[in-house]
Length: 65
Image (tube, rainbow, N blue to C red; front, side):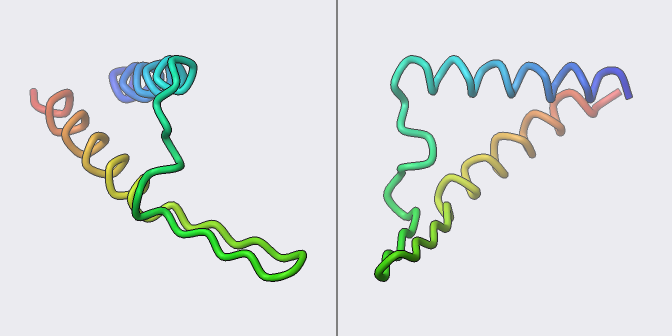
């Protein structure tokens, strides 16, 4: 359980650093934005897929005993 918290913390720190350095996380091609009048709907499809792949690989790597 402790190892999982370390991985989650490291991923959050890495994401924060990448955002600070200007990587457009959340504004990738494949992220959908619909604006109609005063309503805005944002669906981060590409960002979700990339985050899922990265987390899956990290958990597979750190989950092995």
